[in-house]
Image (cartoon, rainbow, N blue to C red; front, side):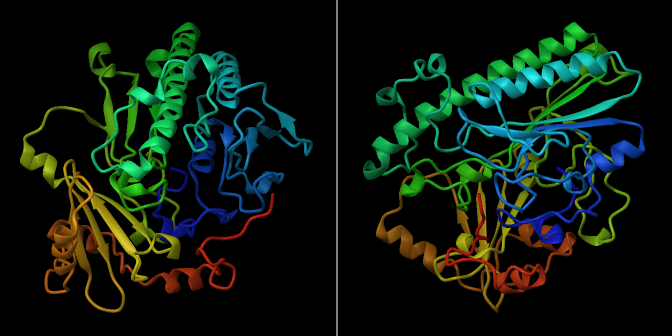
Length: 394
């Protein structure tokens, strides 16, 4: 979203890494086009400590600034405002207070002749999930939560508790989205503003007895984006259509084609396309790629993974030093030992994986090298801890 590049091109394939200050980003490009730019909420690309001050040269071109690197305490959430190095505290549930601030920004900038781009980066829904305001938590009884078939009995109680909190946070954010849309209408800028809602990942929440946002499963992978465009020069009916933004093959700004020194590795700009019913064959051809070279996201055999997803099937491919091998996974319950053995046999290099995934890797000029290559390239090899992540200070 910030650079239009894949993680292995800019180095942020691992938490608490630093995005280079001279990176070409959406805010920098928009600023050169005459936009005011603003960022509110969670940053998490500074890499200097999760509660540390972020200097102006590391803000990637954003002017209006009310940001904290990273926190998961959403009811005692701090931030830094502009160039003030003193921490400030959001009032109450931070997503609500941040929404209030974003609405004030919209009202102020609606009066200006300059266009604007505002990022509102909420922390929730993210574990720990039991932090939504009480009125939303009361809406969901954990005992009545229905679980996916692949949540084993041993994980059921924790999964229901987490899902109740997850749904409470989602319901709160849904209300805040409504407030933002209403603010656009009240300010008179609804028809020439594009509102994009996206997420970086989902969560397993008990599936296969995992509580993990980085696992190669459908939960973390299914994090699409929606855009509600009010495009100037378009008919009202067309402008109100919901659109789907392809998560791995699009950049939201549309300006990041220029300026990147690594042109071969940038993500191609895709036009927002209307969400329509398509024939199954066409839907099946769509494939989103998620790749992870970092150790904590490798397979049990220590091999880095790349993942692809169509509307119905998840492909996970692993490699060591030989050919790329693949496993095709569907939404299904926990497999028994017989099906596990069948899956192991399907990992043979002779069956080199779905052709579409191979084709997309080749088109992206992605060599899919082992984890150590990327860790060394970006200077992480001697810094990662036993779990394969970068240690961070408060």
